[in-house]
Image (cartoon, rainbow, N blue to C red; front, side):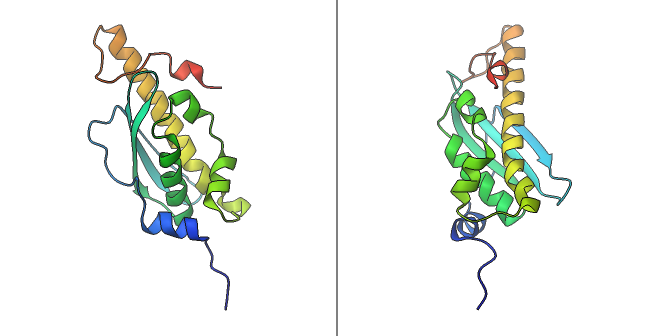
Length: 150
């Protein structure tokens, strides 16, 4: 008998993701591709006041590791502030996945983080543009969200 290729967390989150799907009324959307393996992910966010991430959903065509990482990441950031979400590193996802990930597959874990950061940047730009025009998007946070990245 051979050992399973993926751990239980990866298989469960791949087969039954909790945050997969479209997010109606998203304030921020970003999509990217891992050119090495072809994984494609899209993250949609609903942003609230005080930099809060009220809701997260993801979509895409990705491997088990990238899908599981995206699902775990969505769970980790929903309800957090954007600056808190931006501080999350790949090591946190690697630990949450609960299985060793080969170096050649680390891009599968990093893609959801990169897409989330892109969505948060897009959300900050949209909010800043709306505030500059005098309009205020419903549930929007302060316009300096992107400036708080470290």
